[in-house]
Length: 484
Image (tube, rainbow, N blue to C red; front, side):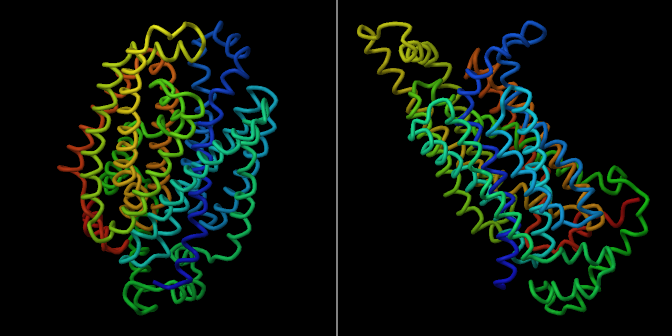
């Protein structure tokens, strides 16, 4: 594996680090924003919905932006190139960080979080696409998965940053600092992008043959011969050229579309974004105090990072399908435990919450408090198992899988549609979580459990294995060339 290839991968994957940071940083600010915007929520709730409805919308505003970014950036990347779009994404991250930190009311906060979400959605499409297109097949799984590694590293950094900033006791501006620190890595990401080349496959699509050959000579090829590699890619492009007038929704693309949309929907139906956005609240629901809840979130980030590193190291050896299989089983065990514990200890958890809020005296309730502590411990370890299952399966596999299964000519559109599906589901899950969790933690985690049972069946009976297959040969494996 060439050093230049690794360098280009790490720079492009920084979009994933900012993706993860931007996604998780909201968890430390969620309760402060609830208090800050309570008056505006109350006014809005008189027109439509409850306070929880509007709070969920404010928290999910970035995810609504991700839908726009994922839907638009894939097509723009096919026109203007992957690297140029990554630069625009860096600018969006920077604007969002500064704007969210300086937001003066609910509307301005939602606007700047939306802008950041557009960047996240774009990064979820462009970063893995760029890495897949510069990587030889034998390294592609590990290299594309570095995007996921950076996502979970960004999540961990956000949790740690939130915990450390809260420790400075900055008072009413604490949440502003939590958002504002993202501006520095966003600026560095933008500057580093000037040091990497344009995608060789995009260059060949646009006819820049000499530049494409130069890039391939720097990053390496599957065949070992630059001329053979270029010829193979161009032959695939000629086939795609004959279908230039068709859309991604033509019959010949139904198979990869179904696979991509399915894995994207299941990714969020696990409840992973609800856990990442509301980790401190979930810990709080199970009896943890504010500081302990933030520290528990750091534990979630550490588990996520550690297991992702292990999964990345084996994805090209064991394949995508096996990782998804074991991840699905881990989901079922952990989500089942979480749902059962919330059902079993609901009254004790509510009691501890009332005690923490000073609503009652707990001097004669030692037994109930001890029981709640037991339930809280089960929730904590089950959440760690849940995050480990996600990191080992869906978290590591999804960006690799959806960047592999589409032909060169429509890869941008296909990955964009799959990412849009993921972010639509993420927005719905994160938006509705506060409403359902307020009523019952058990019910919402039971729903996630049922969804993951369906995912297990999909993995066993539908999902193909894609390890070690070149992007050009993938069309033959999925029989795309034979379909009209």
